[in-house]
Image (tube, rainbow, N blue to C red):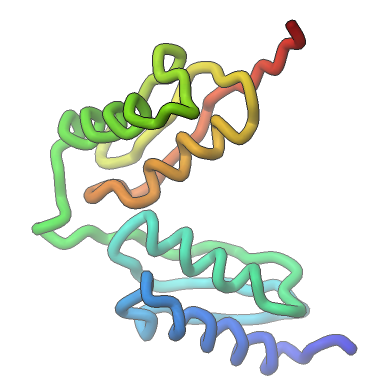
Length: 151
């Protein structure tokens, strides 16, 4: 049985409200049209943006999520790009599942771009996940190339 737009909207709003990663969930607007959810508003970090989108995607009846959320950092969360890059690189170096020698990080205006090569898709995904909780990041672009070559 398919769900109505109102039922989906209620489920998405509940999921966002119940997520402890989203402390100011009332700043997120939810609209649903034929199973497509649009999220609008402001969140305090890139990790919060990803959490809101993931919460919406998990709900039954959701066909797609259109993310129009904006990340707006408070002064205490702002960092210079070089600090973000240093911490991001350290995160990659500290992970034994990643070969950080083949990965790099660029940061411009708090937006992180991951570049380089990985042997497996999970390594590219894992590098991306490390960026989710870095303070001061407003977004991440993953340009890591996965090149799985058989021995």
